[in-house]
Length: 254
Image (cartoon, rainbow, N blue to C red; front, side, top):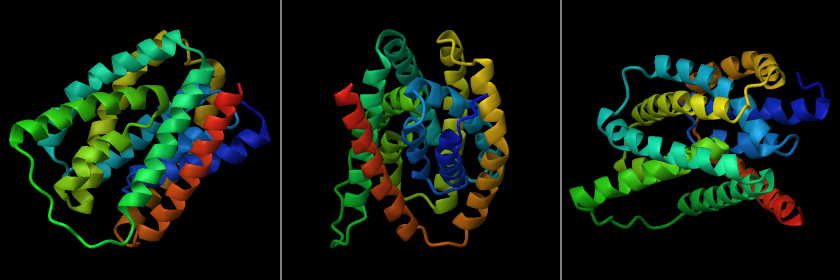
């Protein structure tokens, strides 16, 4: 088990943001991996987080079990399997420095993208895409979601790029996200096992963090029904930009 207090000073807030994300504040959890990767290697950070994510997914699926869009999951999940395999091949063949750089880039771009979308602006009517073009985009972003989820537990940005424009209700968005990533995270287990990342140290560290993870997920379920999320998200995305830039700097310096 990891005993470094600096690790837990970073990991506990990171796990709380994942819990809030699983409870309905979709997107907040993308901060967790890059924050923990500031204390341990990105590969180890991902291995510690995976069992926590799986437990949190159970809570999220149960809470929103009546509110999810089956058609979205049917399109994106098969494509995500392809992305998971590609992510496993990358992680098995490149150094931790490359993974660190990919993680930093994903984090920085996602934070900037979400802040750009949240800026005040006049609403313009979107031109609807054809059914075939929309499905093709869903499949492509499903592959990207599986890939980024496998290497950095950062599958939500591409997932949201296809799902958010569909205008789901908050409960349906939370439920669809929970069901999709519940399946994706279980599909990642064989790849992480093949990479030898389920060590006793990583699993025991994950077990220590589990009570925080479960409590924060229930808190997210409660809060998403009561608290306006706009200001919370602005803070999260600002932190993501800062952390992503820091991780990129570490990768290029190495």
